[in-house]
Length: 510
Ligand SMILES: NC(=O)C1=CN([C@@H]2O[C@H](COP(=O)(O)OP(=O)(O)OC[C@H]3O[C@@H](n4cnc5c(N)ncnc54)[C@H](OP(=O)(O)O)[C@@H]3O)[C@@H](O)[C@H]2O)C=CC1
Ligand SMILES: O=C1O[C@H](COP(=O)(O)O)[C@@H](O)[C@H](O)[C@H]1O
Image 1: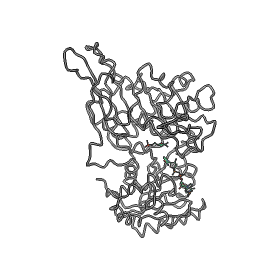
Image 2: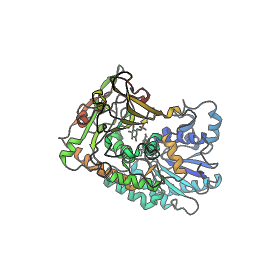
Image 3: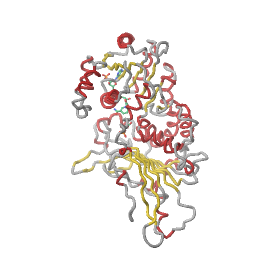
Image 4: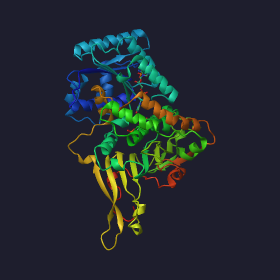
């Protein structure tokens, strides 16, 4: 097991939603799992006027996000843990504020012997990135003379290619690229990492992982929830920026990439970058028109309860054209993937929350059992990212009895069957990696820019273009019917259930 060195974690945005909902629970789990070093301190910082005690109360002892999860035996442990948590109020962007912060960090470092190893976590709106990193630099807190210094940055990494480049340049002005950890929480999901293992730790998949055997690739990312309380942010973003540019293109990169020389961070990130650069950028209007679909959920009744339409959500413009559903068909221009279409969709207010990758294999070249109906039931490899994480292969088996009637059966593996193993939450895993200085599951500047280069022309085409329809779909259905046309020539969207284990196997109608 890699050793985690003593360190101090400064969270900017300590009074925010992400800190309470994801970061603190992740740190607590790391502590419970024995993953934190002996000397570990959390210093929360934001503009809210809180004391150390209030910080501890708000994010731990009285946090609504932990309340149900804390059991009696956690109480003693929590008391010990909260003693390592502190808060510092940043009342303005003034130098004096940051010099006080510097003093506080230095004092905590010496009192708790964290050896000058500091992580600065920017869990703040992007507008605060420049100001905070500039001030850290002015205070000399970027310098790795005593211990190491790392900067974790939350998405969004820019609004488009131009702003992403500006953000990268800003961060790189104050910190070296090797100190910058851009978090993409999908890369912290066990099953996303399992894409690499499925491909490169088995000899049965990789030989087939190319245009000769793969018919098409389908990725679905569906959420049953709407925009919840984030309408103000989401309305300026939309599904393509919020999910596609980051999480889904990272998944695409893992499917498309060539085998890296080793599991070393730079080797993997070099291959992901090549993969992202090989996505065919859609430039002409005809291609954009035929291969992209956007839509918005409209109000509906689910389980007898009225659900708001997107335009009725708090913080959303009543005439908004921001998409809550995006579906794309695209190609990858390289030797391995030439002519293999990729169908990728992401949406809110779908019938269920599910993310999965489906590799659809081609039919056998010569159909011996062609009267069996098997040609309609080609092999599929389903990698279920969430929930019910696992892998399922659909393959043909003979129906008992006379003749050669073929049906499809399932071969499967579920992470839930590993009862002894605690599967780390994404933020837990990613935080631990940053604490140990492993950037493999963090996005590098050039990857982020390559992803924007693919997405930008679509955003430009959609922007203020009355010829591009924003279709409506009722909350709780699988998106607009028009999205079926996108995939129609080759198959149908696999509208999956939330439970992979219930996926129909050997039966006549599936
Ligand atoms: N919440 C989520 O589910 C997700 C969030 N993110 C990203 O994480 C970041 C934080 O999101 P979230 O917690 O939801 O946002 P919130 O609006 O809930 O919190 C923002 C935090 O930033 C603090 N803040 C704002 N300006 C400054 C500043 N100048 N100096 C120091 N602190 C500042 C705010 O506190 P105060 O006003 O007290 O200063 C608050 O603590 C954003 O970049 C977001 O895009 C990414 C993925 C998911
Ligand atoms: O980054 C984001 O991700 C969430 C979905 O994350 P998941 O782990 O629950 O699948 C999404 O709801 C949010 O809009 C987006 O900003």
